[in-house]
Amino acid sequence: MEQLLLVSAARYDHVRTVIAPALARGEWVVSDRFRDSTYAFQVAISDVDLEPLFAEVNEVVIGSSMPDLTIILDLQVEAASARRTLRGPESDDPSEAIRDFQSIRAGLLKLAAREPERCRIVDGDRRPDQVEEAIWREVVGLV
Ligand SMILES: Nc1ncnc2c1ncn2[C@@H]1O[C@H](COP(=O)(O)OP(=O)(O)O)[C@@H](O)[C@H]1O
Ligand SMILES: Cc1cn([C@H]2C[C@H](O)[C@@H](COP(=O)(O)OP(=O)(O)O)O2)c(=O)[nH]c1=O
Image 1 (tube, helix red, strand yellow):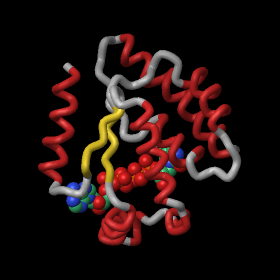
Image 2: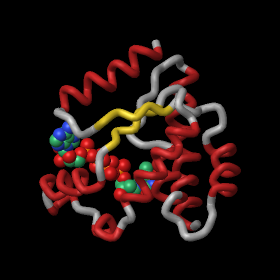
Image 3: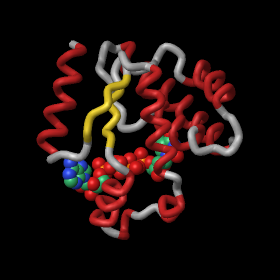
Image 4: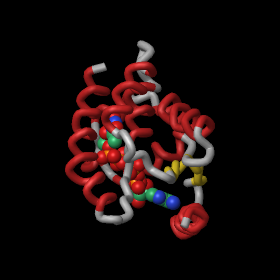
């Protein structure tokens, strides 16, 4: 629960100081990870049910700054782990070794199923240029 509240506090500040002012200026905002990552990392793998707290906190934190489109780059846990190994040890987060990535992935896919209009799953198990093209198809569909 502490992590959920701490990450949410940082997001509260980020929404007000960066995201909301940019939207007010009419700019597009692209964020690498947002509320759904918090759901996956802090709620989906929690032993206690944090769903009600998450819903309440997010109403306050995100308010009207919900994304119109969320791209979920999906990859089997084993393939993601192999990529992290390739990336090398210098960027390793020691807590990642013991993370329940199956549940994290399941959490994101559950959100995508709940909100199919906003959340689009893109198969990440392809060449970078193919992934890029699939992302653009989703973005173009929005504008
Ligand atoms: N389509 C891809 N094919 C092969 N390797 C990839 C692909 N996309 C990303 N990678 C590699 O996988 C690693 C993790 O990717 P990254 O985008 O940093 O993921 P994250 O932000 O989730 O940690 C990086 O070393 C990156 O170069
Ligand atoms: C955005 C976010 C990240 N995290 C975790 C995931 C990562 O292990 C770590 C750093 O996230 P991040 O910097 O987004 O790393 P990456 O995209 O390279 O995986 O923090 C959370 O636990 N909750 C969150 O809301």
